[in-house]
Length: 125
Image (cartoon, rainbow, N blue to C red; front, side, top):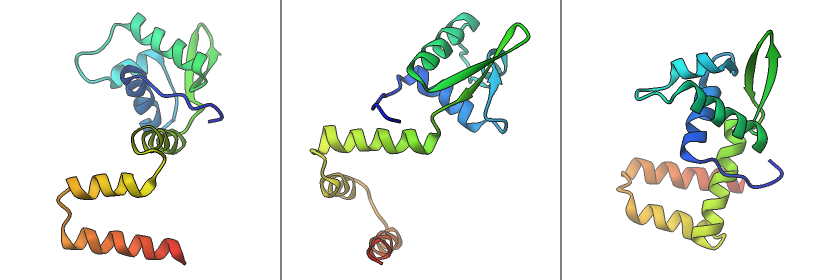
């Protein structure tokens, strides 16, 4: 992702469905079928898909009279961008501030602390 673009909650829900489909793509009706209740109107979903296309998150291929949508931005790429934005906006770009914030608020078990220490050690290697 060249430009840092964030998804709205509704857009993220559509992307989450697309990212988790085995085919990594679908027609509007197929996406709608995967929505939890209450489902949006078909036209509302079509609008979300148009916005996502304009933002560069999905692309569409015309198949007959229908559009088949596939993600252009992968979930890992978006997650990295999103978390980087959180780090920059809320923690002044400091990874240590971000980690400190969560370690103070989470009730980490001894095992989780050991795993975190191991991850840090591995990153030094």
